[in-house]
Image (tube, rainbow, N blue to C red; front, side):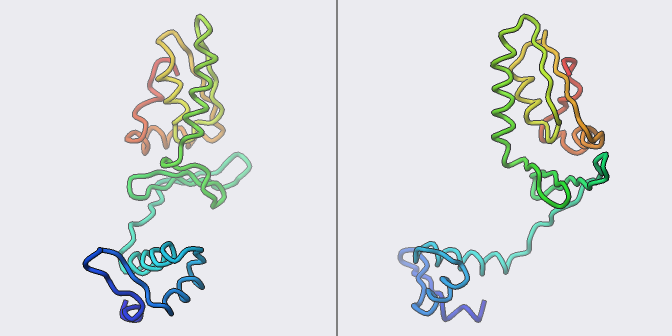
Length: 171
């Protein structure tokens, strides 16, 4: 932080950060911000975050797809993610599309006297949770999962995220 002391000073009265003019240039080069305020906050955030210890991203489990590609389950600060070949495939903090997909399926299935829904891929369980919440006791939900370990991950590691969805008698 001592290197940046000349660039930043705190305005105690306003509780705002002010940046010296040459600091603005530094921020533009490294933060690629278009506005002065965003640039200042971006650089302050970078300096502040770099001085704090980071919470670790914990590898909980690994598996492979039938064709041998690696899949991994991670936990970071109470959030979960599944990665495929090193790329994040899904994250528990970004589940809007999975929830919406479940709601759309429920809207169609509710019209049937004994609704039956098939979900392709269990993932983190968000679509299954939404479908179960939206259908009655007479429904049947079939979950088709290509990687058996994902089912195990939901039973072992993801109980806090979605409960015991797989134990529901409709599944």
